[in-house]
Length: 171
Length: 164
Image (cartoon, rainbow over all chains, first blue to last red; front, side, top):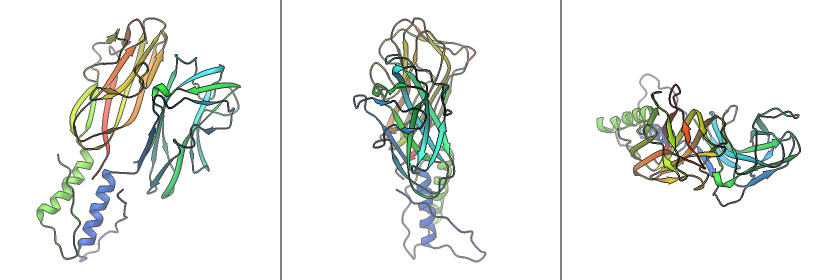
């Protein structure tokens, strides 16, 4: 993967050499191929389920825990899943966790319909795409993963037929 | 517009005008990109299907271009879609006719006869060459309607990463 190099401003009279040109080229290549990672689940790889209430838990701590090395810019996180319920009448919340320390949450805790995602039985899925810019990520390697929880007792399902997708991309 | 593979300059090498112009072309390419497509309904007609297997919605939700090996971000948004009966309408993207997701699900579902919004976004890997990316749909039963009249569903593609 290309690396990004900060380029200092040139002084009057400073000559440009091969190393400078290679740095320019390297930065152009970085812009062409910025840090990007994603996981798309196969349609027969199995559903995800959760019964967790209130406190967000990882959707898939193995496959959807993506590592991305950034330059400190904004990271766009995209979660594209189709949800159902197999018991209860739960309303899920979603979120993104960075390095198991910084959590972005979509949907309030403490009961009461969380993110307002109304679920029905498998076969009548609710499709959700959560696109969120993640700020405040320092330069370096980071693990980012999507999270979920429910507002009440029950079981939510992310159905594999819809090729659940999670991606991150530094812009 | 072309993307130029830039050389690695050796210590004594001095770029000529052509070499510098390659840098400029690459800068311009990053600004404009080859694969940027925005196709939006003109608001004059709705789209309907009774197909229970995935088929293309059709123009303007389809795009063909020569692409580099890499990733394209695809977005599709439709303010309102509905099924005429209590069943489902499924949507997905396809590359050269190959859909993402299951044959009876795609990647996005609206259900029953509830008027619903459709919003899809994926990073899609593409191989080098001429590629067609389009939006496809199916219904479980009845007639699916994607409202174009007075609404303006759109399909957006952007090349976001390629091997330089």
